[in-house]
Image (cartoon, rainbow, N blue to C red; front, side, top):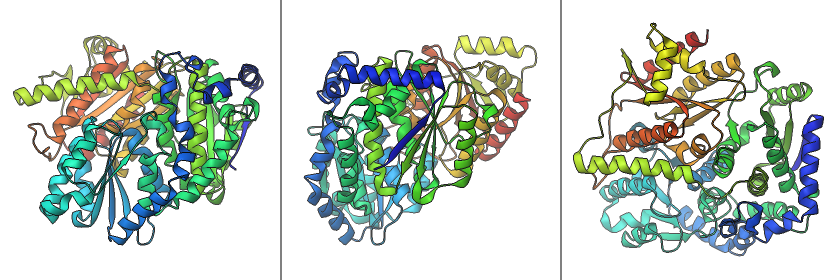
Length: 573
């Protein structure tokens, strides 16, 4: 079974020991398994713990996974496209990137963006006639999966005809949802059901994760058997100080209360995408009521002097594919006195153990922090703002007018009155892109974090430019940095950014779309939806008193990002 070793400075180690002793003395592991809501806020938490028993339930249905895998395999499909957001897509992405293409099984693609360029790029990678689509939506009311389904259903109809179109689609949804009705009316090939008592981010080991994994060619019975080892190790009868999930949760919770709330995630190259799944689990579960953990994923390992004292480092090391530079970097941080948790993952099939360990750990940490680990109130706030804007577009054919507080060739800057006033005052008479960026970055203080939120296509070129921005900021200011692509992160870290500690400084990046795409049956387009999501996201950030600046790129995106990156470097100098 995957091992966990932690090395913490003396006072932090003592806090963790005291936390575990409290959990042991007060039988809190047993209470968790008994679904005792008083461990959290004593509200509806007990209704959201169905994931505790999901592995055993899934093992009992192993034959179902083989049946659907064989069916799609024998159907000769070359591609599998998962249409979903957040918990419905991130675990599938982990499987797709970790296990890769299996001979005779379809190649996995994920669509979790309304960016028109992202959708066009996906289309260019597949043959519609040889693609099976999974529409994944727990509630069936989430905007993005619904419009993805509408768009691709029309594409498939045009390619293979109306009579065959439905056979190219599978739905994963909760019983009785709106998506079930759509699937039935369109004659989908199959409908697989989620468990109503499992929230999206805890659903990796349910049908939301296992059905796509089986279709991809993952040996699901083997995967679940490995996961069951961790389930037993974390069972209600196992004392907290011997329980691998409770130990990790105690570390995260106790260190958060000690001011180390930036959970910095490193993973071996072969399992590097696990961090994106963990971002959602940690941020959406704990980031609320002004408290929480801020996950930091894909920040390269730096020298000890670029880090403050608000970090805890978690290194998930794949024994069959470890990276020597990562090993050395982690060892250096450990020697410098930083708190480090090491998790040894034997091979890809042990990832199910980590799904379950981290779910237990997140529930435990949420209890220690003192929040409801199973709701996402600020994600819902952002959805409401987006819906207002798309409804307005449906009525009037236009989004509300907005006015930048500064404009120069290729760039427009936006914010609310309070932020704009503060930035203008700090920039003084020197009104330039660089001066406003400098004013914004100068707001960062010890214990803060910096988040780049890009509503642009998520590809390697764009990621590289945004990564260079975040790492330049980290190296200069010694604050933790995050990078999210919208609207994907809205269903993930967006909860903590809006509802967690008010320690974030945000740089939102939007752009003009070179070419848009229609949403069948709607006035609005995918580009309009993306614009509404970006505005809705920004509105909620500023309503919550966050320090936020939006940079809109008006010309060539590639050139604009390069210029922005150079402007940030100059602002920091």
